[in-house]
Length: 390
Image 1 (tube, rainbow, N blue to C red):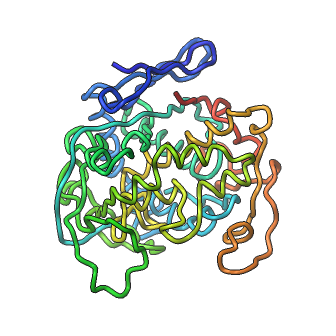
Image 2 (cartoon, helix red, strand yellow):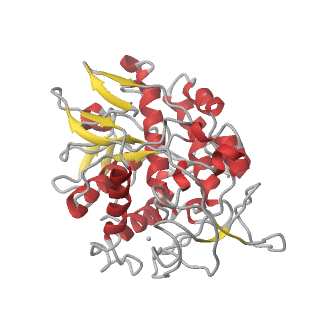
């Protein structure tokens, strides 16, 4: 069994491989107050999946504002929808508004084998902030615990372990119908379509997920697609592309990203361009699962697919890893525009902008229970938020 634990302030972990990396994590607390993690049993994997499904049954806290928010899970998807234009290709983090899904189609198919997932753990409830998605994940994990009695940690998916070949990707434990998130949607031929905005090579699905805990009839998405917050119930669609995934999520891409000399360069490597070909590993993970037609590929409504949370937690883990390669300098290294698609993301022409600094104030609206405003400086390190990674 793989173990990961914090010992004397350092992370220790057995080397993962395709045969031994089948794991989630569970939290315990060591003397330093940080969260320790170990391999999850099948029962514990089921606990996480059960908590996610439980959240989709809890009352919405924003349904009086957004028609598509019918559950607490939906609140998170709707929050992402209304904030998307302020949190992508920009370093600024817009007011999160209150916090926090959509789905439909009429087709089906498939699943894959085992399951591999690692994890992040968050224990503090007072200062759970970093950049926008870090806070988003932290609140999601908190709700899994507080509303659905989840006792474990928020998992992450280390996609590099599945990106050595298309066969490895397709057989990833993440797609296991029993202990994972289920597999692909039935294939939809779009070769004759003229209105496809996301063109992803090697796509193999597009319809409803047909097996696992989030298959058609087991789970619904309620908001979206795109920037719509209207109620539009539908199945969860996936359009997996192993070909695309192994090109964007492999160890070489991750290593190149981690070689960035400062945050300004690092963030550009993570995000990449706007075309599918130019994506970094952030967009690469979205399109590898969402393809041209799946929920994960929708820039706005992607949290409608529960795999979203494992993908983004891994993105957060890699930022933390980059910081710790030169912690004295990088614990305070932040920069970039406060306006979407401004330099260096000026793909559509020049825009006026201001550069983000540590003093920049993020407004989280009604998300946090005891505060609204947080500076970037307060949100720069994971240990300050009482969690760490393997």
